Length: 170
Image (cartoon, rainbow, N blue to C red; front, side):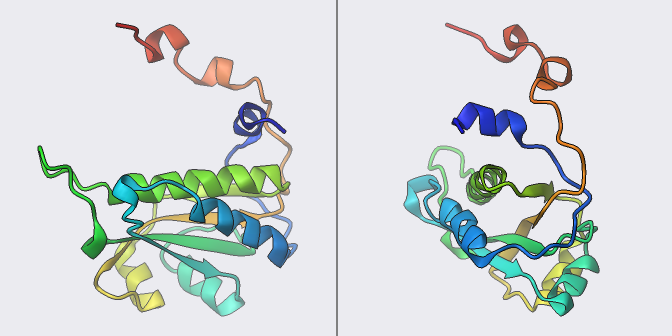
């Protein structure tokens, strides 16, 4: 599949079959994160892969992960953050988001569904996963085999602002 086809096919999945994800597929998803760019190549991110029933229950105390058979907690390492020198903007959220996007697209390519979760209680997640003080959970990526119908690849025409509103040329 071409990248644009994958991007159009990807949608948020909130119902999973429960089938376990093959380790080879999970490894490819994690490799997609590994090759993702980060500001100044600082790589201020850590991924916590959660597959065990006990681990998923812990994550589930902080967020609805829709009974996905796997979740990846995407964390920013606040001690490794690159700061833009002009205004001090810290890029850890951006870096974590790029990794997450790469993983979602790879999951789609592999026939898996995913949903990017930002609606979670970070204090509960930190406590349940015993995260060190320097790691800030940015998002959770729930993964699994979808138990929903595929979304139309053409839905973006109706769901997105027009290209003329999105893009400006100077």
